[in-house]
Length: 293
Ligand code: GUN
Image 1 (cartoon, helix red, strand yellow):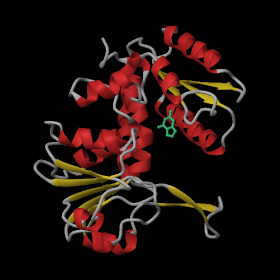
Image 2 (cartoon, helix red, strand yellow):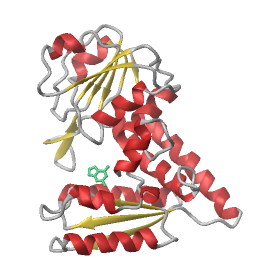
Image 3 (cartoon, rainbow, N blue to C red):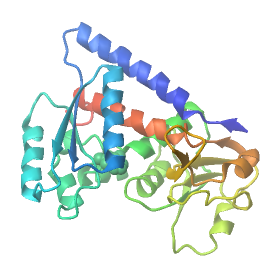
């Protein structure tokens, strides 16, 4: 069994990005610039955005955090997005989700200029990705593909089962894995809460991507000997053994599943750090105008 170490790979990629930024600046270019919009003060969103700002600093990017009160109207928020769209100094924009209930997620996502949509959530980017055109790919699926690539995990012709059909993980990772690509060419089955005989379906998989958001859902009896298991789950549970008082639990019962696997990602330290670094990769692409010229 080989552990897929997202922490080490993400640090390698951050070093590669930092080196590239240094070279851009040396040649008189501008540092990549990410803007993040945060509405209200939801605890988890505060943490996620703080990580994004810290990650930017670590690789030499500029970041701008734009904070708005919970009471901001949808129209006002869309106006703020339009200002960022029109600002040539800003390369990438993310609006941290969820936004307050009186604001539509979809309208906010659609207000972002697709060329600055480094979260890859805009329907134009999703559509372009599905038909194999250059696009910003959302961070978690992009991070998973990068892990499979760097660990040389074979995917061509493999039977891959994705558990979960979310717009930001299940659907895009399924689409990426069926693309004609070096990490792709898989035969993909997407499972969800209405899937019948889930255990039987999973036990035939060469690769399982667990992205349903239920702690320790995938057990040893669902996993074939020699399978590759990618765990996207991050359920926060109280813990007396950590300083923060919390710990993260994946969607996979790691201790019993790992001995059966050829490769497995741990939680924490697997997909999570790769999700963070994928946003930096997209922001670098945005600053270099690679996707949209
Ligand atoms: N909320 C949870 N994950 C994400 C993410 O990747 N991007 C944004 N914008 N909001 C999120």
